[in-house]
Image: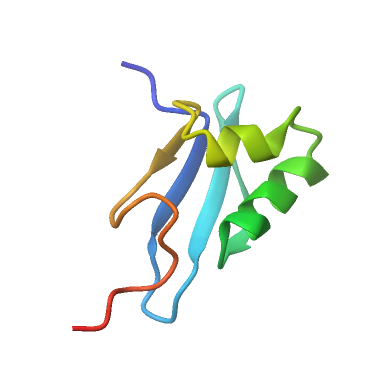
Length: 77
């Protein structure tokens, strides 16, 4: 099974998640998202069509590593 082209990596200890896109086998870091709005903006900047629908619609194009999708900070325990 091929990896999704957009990877939202694990939550960092300081919060936020690195966002990586794979195009033609090359990974490019788009930035660190601290919210769905940040993720949508990164995708909008690289001209992904309807980025809000991709993010908020839980598209299979986006793979979330560790933590829950749409979670950008560790839960307080």
